[in-house]
Image 1 (cartoon, rainbow, N blue to C red):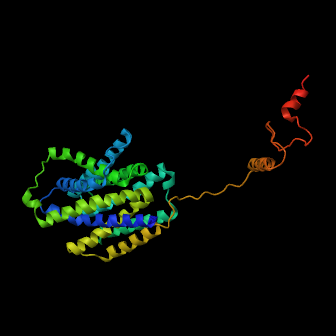
Image 2 (cartoon, rainbow, N blue to C red; image 1 turned 90 degrees about the horizontal axis):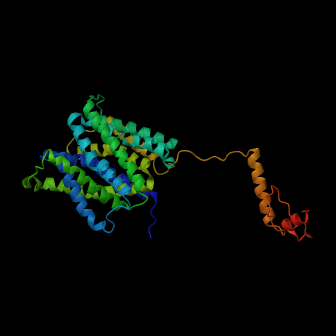
Image 3 (tube, one colour; image 1 turned 120 degrees about the horizontal axis):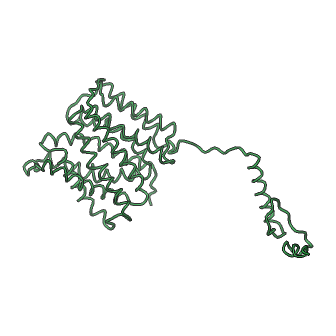
Length: 357
């Protein structure tokens, strides 16, 4: 039987962000073929939900209403609302701003998790690694253009997307120990589809069969639905449960690097020296705060024994010695171990009765 170690979950998280980094190119190709972001999300999650149904049989609902509402919140924060805010931010702000702000999700997740979850506190090594990876991510996103054009509406939408992914990480952290990853993923797809439907009341679905039958369209939709959604969401939720939300979300820093490499190979964009330097910082920061870093930042140190503590320890040692002796243990409370004389068979109760008048 194969023993699943943490390194396999790190590889799963790395594979997931690698695929998610390449989805930017696929989404850009689909938008160029007259598909809206809401239509892309609907087709992507519908395909993923149909593909995951044969593997997620059995349980249909959560154990209680509270968990079902948490699953609905996961589908809303990590599905429909997240993709809508991210794609709407691209309409008002440059892609560099949106990518930079959305990739701050690991920072917000680490801050919130350290406040509410004691076991998710970051060590100094993880803080240093996250800072280096964040600096490298900035260099990769800017790609040599060190000027950011501020757009309040687009920047606020991008910040909302980062906050939504933080909420999704917290919800998955809370549900991961009680339900399998594949069940959580199926419910995320279901509630993502349900919550995206009201959008089409304002902007109806307009993709016709002629557009969907193009090989470049259905090929990218298959990649987004089967690989980037069904497979990657299952792997990500499993890694979130095993590694924790902080260590798993740190891999998001790797996302812009994959996006630039995929854009260079598929679209023909140019990579600058700043992007290469940022890639080196991302890899070094992820290694520094990676599998060998402890999940908890503080080590428990043994306090020196005070006078009261040493007295308690001496009384415990005295009781242990008394239990191993041949004399019976006294039935009254005593701070010291005082056995009865060997010739006395009366015990404390009979001795007390003799002393009565």
